[in-house]
Image 1 (cartoon, rainbow, N blue to C red):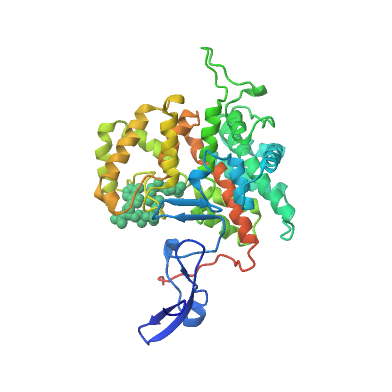
Image 2: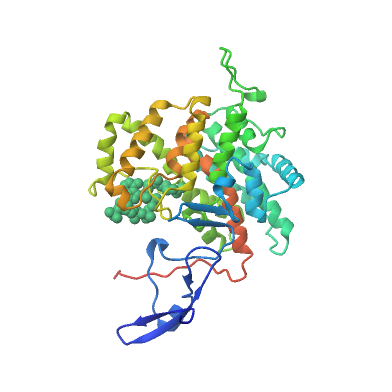
Length: 428
Ligand code: ACO
């Protein structure tokens, strides 16, 4: 066995450059090429960062070949639906699950931090009717930087803690208000007697004065425990996903010393795109467009046609070239809730037919294209009476903890540098 190094040779002149190979606790080794430019006068070229590790991290691990996702060492299957979303937030931020007392204390603190400064609520008024809630949510999040102005004290753990907890607590309130504003209906303030996830459903559904709608036929839109549990598991499944596009954006903006909530707002912007979190909204549009199981082969053929820009939304992933474990959990949840929540069976049938046709097709098999988390969330969210335009804000609520934890890790890393890639110039 040779040394733990990697040698790059320039075949034009035979010059060699030697670099250390670093091993993490899991996953592929990495070659430390930080001094490559200084040594050779050349850059490495990796658009889309398909072979580049941009940081080291202790938070989340993905093994895309073996469908494995772990937060702080725990498999996602052992967290979603087995621990509350808030306990998973605690785990991500603190590195361990809370004990009973810590869990209660954290839950209580989040309830009390869920209110918004009235100045933020006035921001919603400035938005036009039918504004997409993602746009409004991004603006409201950015506006928090005008209120929480004190510069973060990097040596003060309490200051970090407060800043993280505040954004997690306020995101559902801002998301629900962004939605209500898009309809022009009165805002509902948080209810401290309700747990995080129940509170969000309450702020979405309640009438002014906090009344829940009665349907007048013996049914009511009171929040059921099964709904809270389902949405809580959905939040957990979205909680973090290592260096994805929006987290990389949060870290890049954070690396410039921007305000933490400005960094989170930039994550919201990055998440909105249909190649990333915006895909969950597009999946639902696409299932409706397909309209019937008999049309599935036509759309599979379109997705395979190189001359057609149509892509199967909710399929494919940069890291998972096998099943996405989050999608598997959601598929299980869908089955469990089918009768209990009266899921739309027509959409479920179309989704199942799309999945079966794609998984049996060489085009998808050869490229390792499997359903991702966005493929399954929509039908469940619809049964929870969440409108389509709120699908991506739901993703934001779940992911906020991941963004802010990754941001904190960056800030506490003494070797972190401003994100500043180089380029291969091909212009005049
Ligand atoms: N439908 C049809 N073909 C696809 C799809 C799809 N959904 N996804 C990838 N492909 C094909 C590409 O055309 C390409 O084919 P080629 O090799 O013949 O050129 C090959 O598979 C590889 O695709 P890339 O775009 O190079 O893969 P990349 O890793 O860069 O992109 C991405 C991953 C963006 C997720 C892509 O699969 C996609 O656009 N999927 C649809 C949108 C989606 O569901 N996004 C949500 C992702 S999960 C998340 O962000 C939460």
